[in-house]
Length: 303
Image (tube, rainbow, N blue to C red; front, top):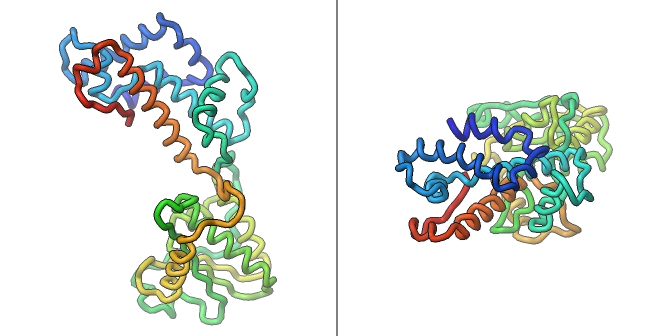
């Protein structure tokens, strides 16, 4: 209840007022609130040190959480193009400048865009059942041009998330087809990602990559019958198995061209900011006089 209701109420609008938490008076008041919650969670005695209870419960000091929420707001606004505090050296905007010095990944192009209403592509989207694929003739257009797409990664050579990879290969497939300038043809693109199909079908777009993909597919469908079809992965469908093999072969090498190839997923930025919070949490614990001796080898972390 504390992390789901109380803390969100306290941190609401933190991007505006977080500098006020830098005073000792404000931090003492915040500590009182969290201490009551920590004692209730653990059932500890009233004499138990606040910092030790926070470590046991995984609750960072409240002023650190407020700064974390403020940074997340700044990161989201930056991705949407609404952040104007890059050059400010005072006030609430300093949270962004401080974080980007320690973590340059936050400055990389984000994959998200401002939510946009984009009509669904002028193409058919089919999600057959696995049983339908047992007879491939029931799902494949007999007189059409059939394309299969798939993504893969090898070790740490992944430059995108799974969803990004699936959307990108559909985009690349559409661009490759447009090079041949087909007219009045039936074109079927098969993918094993239902998430990608649903994102393309949705009218509300929050991903830069999905927006580009929908534009290409609309161009393709303007003078052809275009169909996006879901195919079950690793189910013995010849075309899909070949696409998977080729994807694995290509994933062994390194991409050619300047980085960043795709935008940074918002989730990756959030994960990075959580790591920064955990470091600050651990630092506050180590700086607490003598308290770290009470909980031996206990590593702090914010969930």
